[in-house]
Each structure stands twice: as structure tokens, then as C-alpha cells.
Length: 418
Image 1 (cartoon, helix red, strand yellow):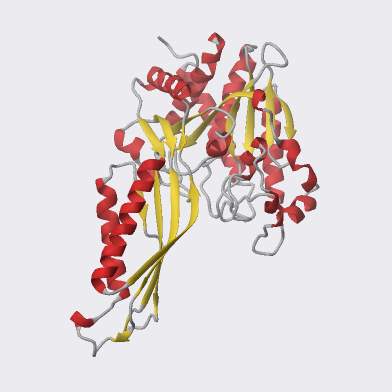
Image 2 (image 1 turned 90 degrees about the vertical axis):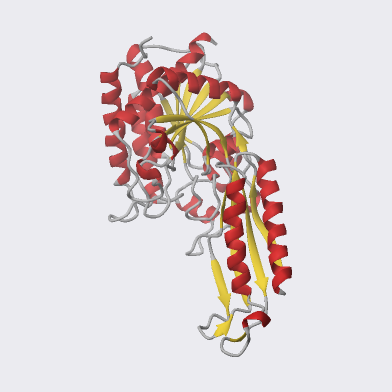
């Protein structure tokens, strides 16, 4: 059976998306690197540009109280609930041009098809460009999507950026009202589902030689500060068998982290990302080592089991070496399972477009994590070259984007039968 959007039209849609990604990439706080953060002049300029594109495909457009840009394409009845499509428009520093933006602009192509065909569905379609997923400026992630769920914490308004400007001050500087944040919250009855298209940000699709995949879950994460304490000593006078070398113990544990995590299967990952030695001299045995541990996986029970195993192994290593090991968790987020019905619909659409599909979890966080607190979520992944993301070398192909738009549209059109 042929797909609804013919290949030639899909290619033209992909060209528009790529050209618009280029346009948004010019809206940056610096000319030599793409950086667009929450509550900046560039944030509003990007919203204005995306709002114009929304209007061009027949959408009613508004900017909500936390700075999300929103557009609505009505259904057959004006009070119909909506399928929510979208992703984020903010970036990390020195970013690539597809993370987030690709999802928003591909959603507009779905609406554009319906607008050109003068079609309405039993449900409405809303597209949203979330204001702050990355947390680059204030260190708080998912501010845009938390806004529509009503999960904004009161203390976020007092959080400051590196220049000491608070969220509240930044809002006022752009004529947002910090006391009106609650008005961004949407009723549960407003939406029936959320669909997000995103680059994979990993190498699995490329390894499988597939353009598209369906996301099973968004990984949960645990982050800890860990510490090995031994005894500093003279590097020349303390015999090897009498040392309490904190760095040697930490190094042995780092190897164990890699080995044990590999035994838990391909979808669990653990990373020691930072390490600091004290006193940090070339001729002194390390007396103390501080390091971080990041564990992620699509099932919380498996993440927690791995964490218990790794911490137990650290204690064993410390005891054998006469060291003291301690740890403190400073970040925890639960895994988000994608809705089974939406997964099935996305999978069927991908099968129709590319003949087969790959189911995989997302190792990175997404706005879908926040949205899932209120509505069922589904995600469609698109291959990116080398799995590179959060970097100027982010790269996608026109053909992959064309196929993604076709699958996205097929998924949305499933609501014709609802």
C-alpha cells in the first residue's frame, strides 16, 4: 500500500524542513556558534519565526505564559481534543541545528499537508515549540513542557543564571508575568496524545542501516558523587604492599563499572564522567579521590539493581585496600515508558514507509518525559550521522527526513479512524 505523502512531495517537505533549520540556526547569541537559551532575545525571535510558519499552514498561534510557541489546527469540531506534536527550540551552547528544531518543523509539515488538502480530523492538532528543554541558562530542564503540565516548582523563579539574573527577572525583562505561570497549564482533557519526532542522538539506527525507529522508553537516570579516602604518602618511600592508594582503588572500581554494566545488557549504561585527586602531586600517593557516577536505563528496576551492585563492588574494593568509600545521590529521574498504543501506531507507520522498524530506548531526556505525567506519549527517532548530537557536526539526510515526515503523517492520520 502506498504511503499518503508521495515520495516527491515528501522530498520537498524535507527540503523545507532543512532550510528552516538553517534559518533557525542563524538566530543565535553569537555568529560563530549556535546558542539559543531560555528568555533571551533569540528565544523570542525564534518563536516569532516559527509562529509565522504556523500561521502559513492555517494554525491559530499564541505564545503562552512560560514562553512556549503554540499553534492549533482545528478538528472537525472546534472543541475537539488535540494530538500534541512538537519538541524544543532552545539549544545547548555550540549546538547542532537539528536537536529539537527538527521535531517542531516536521510537525508543521504534517499540518501543512492537511491544510493543503483541506482536511480536518476528528481531533485537532496542536504543535508546540517548547521554550526550554535543555536547561542551558538556569540549570533547570524541561521548563517549557513542565509549564503545560502545571509542574512548575515555585522556587524556580529565584534560580539565577551565571550573571545573577533570576528566572523571574528574565521573564520581566521580556514582558512575561512571573505571577501568570499557572495560566500555561493545560487541562488533561485538552490532549489525547503527544508525539515527538527527534534525532536519535546515538548510533543504533545507523548501525542497523535504518532511517527510522520507534522509541520504547526514555531512560531513567541516577547520578552520584562518590569518594574514596585512603592515606596520602611519599611516592618513593611507601612500599607498594603498604599503601592506601585512593586512586588505585578508584581506578579498579572504574574498570568494574564498565565490566559489570556490560553484563546487564546493551540498554543499561554507566559512566564515570569526572575524577579529582588530592593532593594531586606527581610524587604523592593519592589520599582522596572524588568522582561521579551516571547510570541510565529504560527500566527503573534494572537501573536500581545495577546501582546496588556497583556500590557494593566499590565497598569490596575499598575494604581490600584499606580505603573508605562513600556516595551521595544528587540527581534521580524515573524512566518514562512510551504508550503501548502509540508505539504500535508509530511502528506500523515506520513499517509502511521503510519496510521494517527498530525499537530502541532513548538514552537522552526529552520533553516527552514531562508531558508523560499528564498524557500518553510516543516518540519517533530519525538517524543522525555518527550518532553525533549537542555539537555543530549534527547531520541528517534529506531522504531520512522525507521518510520521517511520511511516517509522522501516517501516525497522525490513524486518528481518522478514532
